[in-house]
Amino acid sequence: MIHPTAIVHENAQVHDSVKIGPYAIIDKHVTLGADCVVGPHAHLIGHTTIGSGNRFHSGCVIGDAPQDVKYDGEPTRLIVGDGNTFREHVTIHRSNTLEEDTRIGSENIFMANSHVGHNAIVGNRAILANGALVGGHAIIGDGAFLSGNAVVHQFCRVGSMAMMQGCSGVSLDLPPFTIVRGINGMCGLNSVGLKRAGFSSEERLELKQAYRALFMGSDLIKDAIAKARERFTGVLAEQFIDFIDSSERGTCSHTKR
Image 1 (spheres, rainbow, N blue to C red):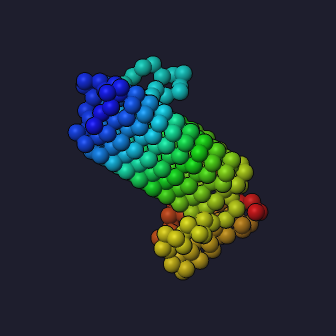
Image 2: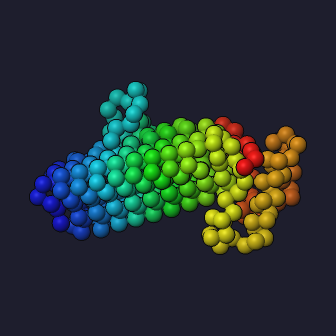
Image 3: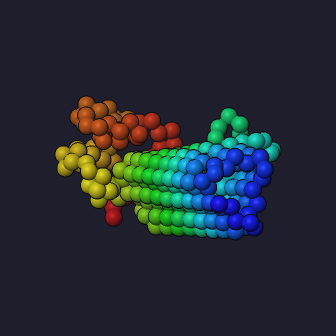
């Protein structure tokens, strides 16, 4: 169902089951999968491929050009998975080069006025609360939670199930399963999130021990990583250690609550 005031380009690929509201705009190179709902005044633009079951609320702009002075109008891309929710005035920008895409996974929630910059990657089941900002080339892991007005600097990584407190910011990598407050200050593990996700008390305890060994000990980080690999072998701990070991920017550091 397409509202008579909506503008849908004749070359846009729109599934028959899609609902498009008043004054929405679907541009020429957009592909829109089954059972999507496009709200009033939403604008889907650029070479943007969207899966099924996504909801676009009023005024969101999905797939517009990157905010990059080097961008010269190339037909760059945005790829969106299934079952995402984009609330009012969310902006997601396509990539700034043909070699990379901006990518959004599935079942994410982007609350009002949140933003994802060019070439960024958002995994699955992440939540960006109102006003959260993700810079270009950043990577947001599965199940991460960015609270209101949280900011991720360009090229940073936020690990799986990490949580950023309101108005916090990272200019370094934030390891998975951790919580950050202020600027780059980790204050422990996302224990409530881990418990809700069904991880056992043994897994959570080992992860807590790994956190203390890596961030609250006296060893240099490279030595702490080597010792941690020998001591901690569980899946969560290995993922935690691998993330830290692979960081090119360096990671956030521990701070007292």
